[in-house]
Length: 324
Ligand code: 13P
Ligand code: SF4
Image (cartoon, rainbow, N blue to C red; front, top):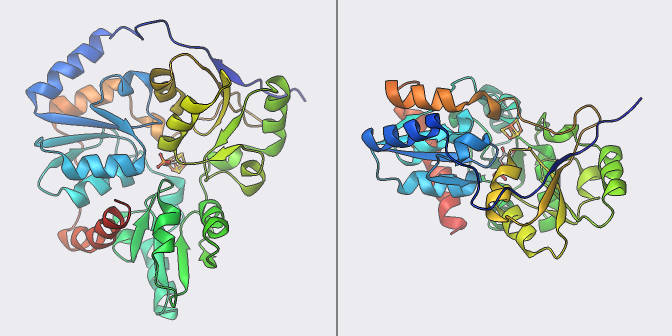
């Protein structure tokens, strides 16, 4: 069987990409509607190009909390937009496609977590931010891939930790902190498609290129990487690499951000065994047209029961405080 060849992203032309007519319309509309556009690093290139801020889950949570505009248009997945609403409830939060979910959030229903907690009342629940507001409301503290070790290190030593819902991130954090943790059996359907075999084939084609991987990858893939970190930390790490070519083992949208911030390097999107690059189907549900329509119509809007919002805000605020 022949395997997919990795996708190569050479540097963009000097001055970057020109704005399309639709992008210009969106920029005019966001001013007219007093909206701020926050976009995750995995969003499409044309969406990143109209955003006021592009970043990882942690950076986006801080930006959402500080947003002054009456509308936050969140280009990412549902749990990220919910997070924005939880920390800044007086703003209207829009999400271009309400179906933009996350396999990690799906793996951990609130009722299941409530049952585990009821059976083990001493558990301290550390929840990766990739979970629903109802799950956050049942958790003691939230973390992201950018601050997980810092957060776990602050958990009282006498409390057994339940880490939800990503077992791969949890295993990585347990190794880094030396803290034993019970792991929820969830994973990111996209990141677990990276395999050691596909990564080794890519490395054989680009032997000088260092490898960076997201902690949602399996341990066997992480072990092959020169660096494992959140999407935000990848930007700085790539900037500091002497080599001009770098293998990026995460969702391929990340490369749009890297191309803008680290303009002279070539990025190789690590393939899976089946596909030349790896995209999250949820992240890609947002399109520039949907961003435009969402701004124009003020819908779909993220709404949640106030009791859940208030309860979910406690562990989120704890994270923002512990990680400052
Ligand atoms: P980051 O916080 O590292 O951007 O990760 C978010 C995510 O969903 C990764 O799949
Ligand atoms: Fe969720 Fe994975 Fe998509 Fe991130 S890449 S939003 S963890 S499904």
